[in-house]
Image (cartoon, rainbow, N blue to C red):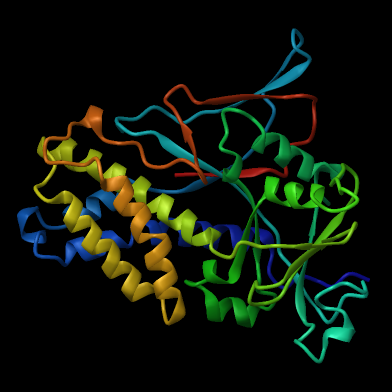
Length: 342
């Protein structure tokens, strides 16, 4: 008998996606309290913040294309006066349950490992939705040329009780594993013999509560989780906000403010120092700071709307003014696939 989940996936989706967006904008509060704040009208930065919102939608199939045998899908954004493009993330949230041990002899959480570690872990089920085709649908999305492969991820929050959830609200990201769908497939294929996550086969993802140990089964293999992924996602989203901030300032002032680059870098560093604690401060400085600095390299005081550099695009996909169009190979139930737009 399966255990009942105390927290549903929608709750994780609403809270973690908003945490991601809020974190990406947090450096702006440091600009608001910096020595440049007197150069702009009161609530100037707050006006910019109001323009950036996140919303989620479900994926549906729009129309059949008999000429190709596939199905056309289109994701569009209502036209607005924005001079920048929206971004898209496919974050497939999964809710887990606490599990005492795993019976597989090679598992990190086998009872034989009790002398080394607590075998308690979080157990997630995936490829159980869309009639057992959810993973295949996500794989096809990640392999679509118009979609950034690593913008299609599973999010496994390592939280199983309401009490723990309430305690970690505002800091859920640090307690979640962000796993690109294609990385699961890559590591499965690298096993000997090779493993394929096929349609109709439900799999489990197991992880220690600190995220340091992970594994997958139906067909068992140890999974090497890259626990710095969320730092990289945050750094990309910060760069997206910097791009939009430059658009906002030039649209309202006509020119970019003097020393924009240095003010933004100082604000980002202040944000890192305040938000990330203890050992994670250095990791954040190594993974976030240089990425932001590299993005800002081409900024100068003479920049125009047309020459603002595009923020990196690895964990998010740009939705242009014409929308994002792609084709599926067959008609499948895509109602279990959600995406986040900001």
